[in-house]
Length: 373
Image (tube, rainbow, N blue to C red; front, top):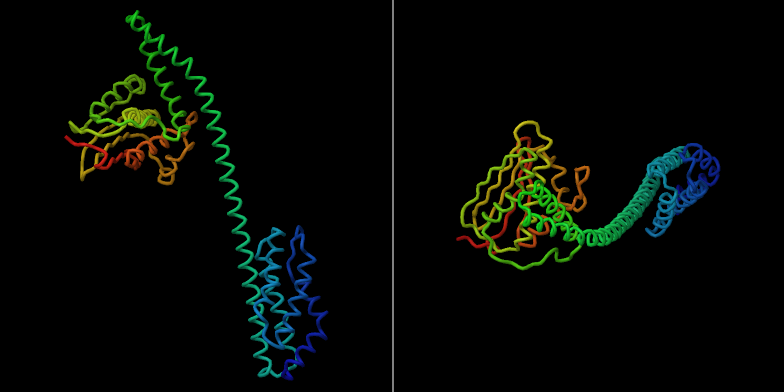
């Protein structure tokens, strides 16, 4: 031990009470801090570490033990870590000030001041790092809990919806059947065609819920489908909705494009996208337009459905394909989610692009899933 070290330790011990008193007056403590007494105790322990560090370098474990203890207390106290950093810096400043006024020659004192600075910096770094690790772990656990709770709620919602929809579908099937009988027996009876269309729409919405609750969505039987004919049938089915919404539709599709897929699944996608376009166009003043086009390019079948409705913001586009996300007052938020799953089931992809003039949904099915005549 050098004479300077001996003199400095003796000096600090003689003035320890005064030093700690000044530090306690200067530090910041929150009124709701449950560990106020521990803050003061940790200050005493840190002062002891300073005196030991003057004798010989401390081990990493000696510094880490107090740093981790302090970090855990700061987390449990639920106060900002900036208070801790401020209090440590106050302690360092007071210690350096007292050491500088010890009367020891500066040449002998300088290495000891550097050791004290290094100790405070290392202690602060280890404590803040541990504090951050604990906080991040807590956030991960909280996110995991929220995700798990959300999944459980979705499961319960799915079970309730599936049960309700099954019970609702039985009488609906009977009503659809009797409506068809009336059409056959009394073809001139007014409003039957409207009733039939609305019932089909209701049955379609019910099918959406059932599709979400099924692992395989719907029957996966595949066949060759003439895309033009299938799209024309869908548009014809939606004609009353187009007429009621005052929407014009422009259909351009290359002839003889055949796709290998499930007829009902693809119809589900076409219906959903066109119905969404009709709904969006109700917010437009003036001409309401939908364009549907399909072509084969670079070995891929491309189906493009566009409307001149309101722009979808860029930050919203990714979210619209998530389950239960909707911007409609009475929307279910499952339509586009189902579209995405069905197209992916066909080995394809669906995307959306929107600007002030047009909102466009593009469906791409790879060449191995289609046949071009």
